[in-house]
Image (tube, rainbow, N blue to C red; front, top):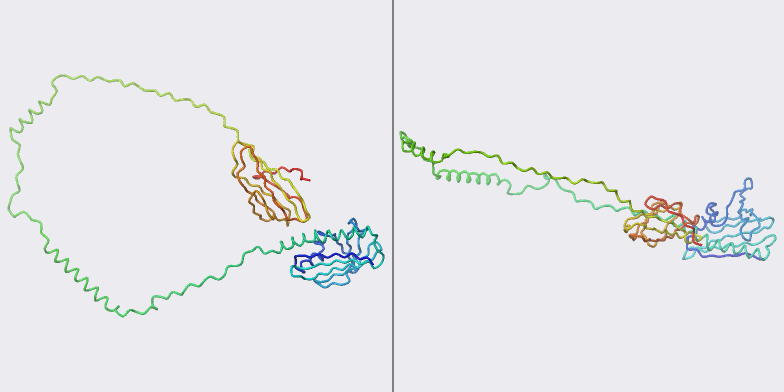
Length: 363
């Protein structure tokens, strides 16, 4: 009996591998689509027609199921009946998956068997690990731990709780003594201060000076000396007027705006579990462009693993890239790796809110 036997070591726990084997949506992503056959009592239809080594779709019936260790199916492919066994064994690194298909009625031609075994090998060593990595990322809890309890502040006692000091009853007496001493000192100082002298009763004040005839004559001679001796004429002096000519302002045309940055996106390489994207930024202007922002929108579930030539942050499906200044008349290029087993290009790309140009993918 010729069997097809494949075994692969996986760095994932057994329950995650079991989910990838039994979830119809996940199975369609790494192996083939599965349909439930109506009225067939638990029969499944594996849409394997078109896969290398398969002649038609496979009618599969689950005969044994022990989660997360063993899954056994009886398969019928165009009259050829086989038994497919998937066994999961935990290991220190994760688990080991063994997939064995043994014919029960009929067999495969040698060439078909080789192609069928190669198909199993490809999906088990390439596509399945990619889906498991994607599942592992979806299950990562990125939330920070909750802060611990803060230390309680010591209780502050009320004023009435404090014991009254022993010398408190003597304070009023001491304060009264100090106040009396201050009052006595003030009265003593006031008593020794000199008093203002008042004029004696009956004494007349000093008489005011009375002008005499000599004083009047002196004032008359001074006035005569200061009077002008002849007639005077007043001459009006004409002041020249100054007229400042204001220069006329001629409006000048504003310089044309500097051309903005442009960006072009290219998918430079693809692989089973993702792709590598590249963005080329051109600066046709005459001055360096210091601030620029490129936003790449990934498909749902896609994540950026790393980037070269730019700083980045991811918020949901949007990944924002910023980087160094772009020299005048020059360009700047950055690349980024995306983990996405479903698509091989982002859904969108903008450069400062303007769409990026799409370039042909690099072969």
